[in-house]
Length: 281
Image 1 (spheres, rainbow, N blue to C red):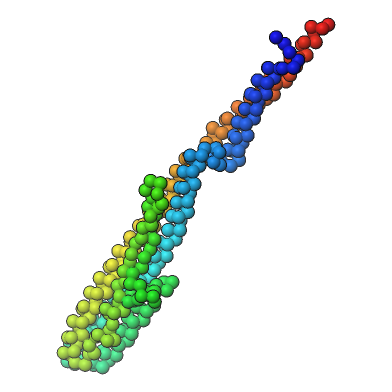
Image 2 (image 1 turned 90 degrees about the vertical axis):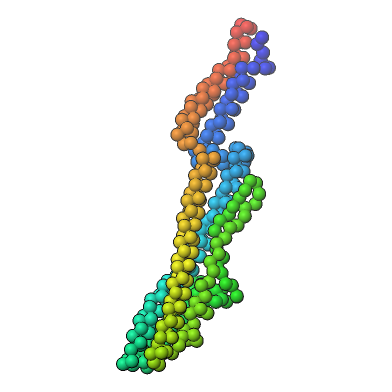
């Protein structure tokens, strides 16, 4: 049955054209934004997952900054500890040379005093951003360890848990107090006593430097891991929400052809009522 009031063919053509135009608009958005899931309405589940992961990526970037600061603090202290080891080795040599009777003990002690002052100076100067791992009080507020944020651990849908790395002070300020604890060299007997004391101080310095070196290596490794983790998470987010540009390009061209055909189909359907006029001629 033909009717001039209801054009079923035009309605079908119009709905088809609307669907094509909607797909075309979505494809154009994908190409312009580079994302298949740009908003929650595109795919609410994937969008929610991507936003949680993006927040974690932002958190890990802050963690990387924290680890870099911790690395620098430990590196400064480690350099100071290694310098103290070298000074103590020189002092040990002087103490060994003082074992002979025909040496100038006063000059040896003068050199010892200068080196002891140098050790104290290095201990005081081995700070980074106000934190000194060679001192008894690391930050001036009674802290005996440096806490560095190292990770955010998420299990299931719960809130992430912060993980930290703690670096203890080696406390050279108290354990290597040469001014108070090193015997002054005035003869071979005191030289022998000082040599034994220096050996103890040297072992303390070596142990402390080794501990700081191990902590520095751990912080560096963790920072490298966090960087790789951020890259992996970014890749995962991209897999979820990024558009396949090759596919989108091919789809765009196909939809443009379909749009042209849809317009042509609607035009033909709109002309159908004109054929009714032939019935009245």
